[in-house]
Amino acid sequence: MPRGRRGGRVSALEGGPEEEAPPAAVAVPSALWVSGLQPEAAAGQTLLRGIFEIGRSSCDVVLSELALRWWPIQPERPAGFSNRPKSLKVILNPQSHKKEATQVYYEKVEPLLRIAGIKTDVTITEYEGHALALLKDCELQEFDGVVCVGGDGSASEVAHALLLRAQKNAGKETDSLLTPARAQLPLGLIPAAGSTNVLAHSLHGIPHVVTATLHIIMGHIQPVDVCTFSMTGKLLRFGFSAMFGFGGRTLALAEKNRWMSPNQRRDFAVMKALAKLKPEDCEISFLPCISSHDLQEWKAEGSPKSDSSDQWQTIQGQFLNVSIMAIPCLCSVAPRGLAPTTRLNNGSMALIVVRNTSRPEFIKHLKRYASVKNQFNFPFVETYTVGEVRVRQRNKSGCDPEEVDGRQAAASEHSFPWNIDGDLVEAESEVLVKLHPRLISLYGGSMEEMNDSKVTCNCL
Image (tube, rainbow, N blue to C red; front, top):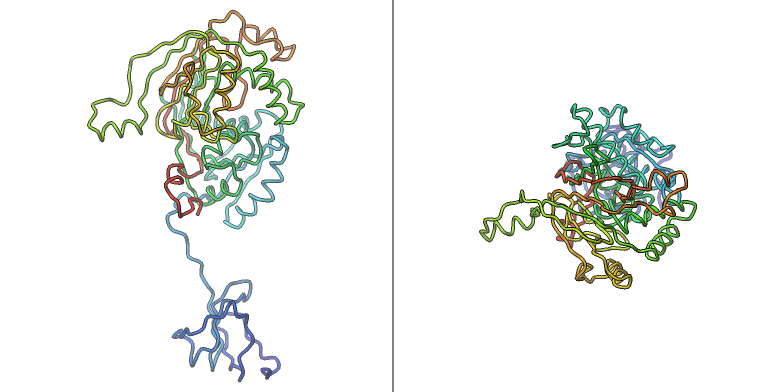
């Protein structure tokens, strides 16, 4: 094959001197060859055209009969992503689940953020409550969002910290919150750990690291309802869901045996709680609330119903479990969700009470969560759509001594375990749970949009 003259290289500078083309076509990868194109800037007949790397930049290269010309390709800026972050504060919990959070972040998340041109400031937590203490006084003005890498416990702690910081900035007392201030920065959840990942699963539809990262990069923001949990007028914490009774006692048993692996600890706690299954004597008062979805249907039908009621209702008796949830709480063991009738931001909570029944019947109810059958289709299960809930325990004794450490037994004698977002909270008296619509924004897509769209991907 004829060769061009020796030393006939072309400068890689745009607008550099042109060179005469060799009499024969230069070998070019056929995959990059686009024929039949006649750009105005190229003189003569186009012999070859393709995309090549010149000076570490992608260029449109045209070889004509008289000259070799190229132009740098300018990537188009994506439209419709006005919330894309430029700088993120990353909080990483290295102790979550199998201690894989650090590896997952630096191998899967950090490279994507770097390619997207997002600056990050990473803090690795060293003890329980470190994220709360950090975000209390950390300068957040330079960041567009906060990202938590860990499980449900870590995500809940960071969300709680962001909301506390918002109250502090707004000059509000946390123990007298009627209308809390919204969190100022959106929160991203990377499910790099955890055995359930309820928050990430409910937000993205799947606890997938890359999916969660792409939502953050694209700036997909979803407002989410949040609950306040208070006792005797004092704020316990912000949260998304809570369980009392079987759910609380199971978590108390699991926390006592943290030396086990997460899956073993969970299975052991469930089996032991079932073996010692006992009801709680409670009085539950709630303020009924109509969900926004039902309200829209009723308005479309011309129904005069309002969106809420100011009439408190009370039920009492022996309850095996009480669940209060502002989000669907999807997870691997409950693919339809622990509260499938609620949404991330429909302005209502799901109150699910399981009255006292036999152990076999209760186990049947639990097994329904993993199937497509209705887990609430039992005579001892009641569901309500509410805006506020008060739970008052009437038992004389609280935690079982086997559920707590010895040094905590005396303090827990008259307290009751609550499972709030996977964290164990001891309550000694009536607990008030109140919903606050769209109090925080999370990076993620709308589940309704994902379910309706069968062709397009919500991540891109």
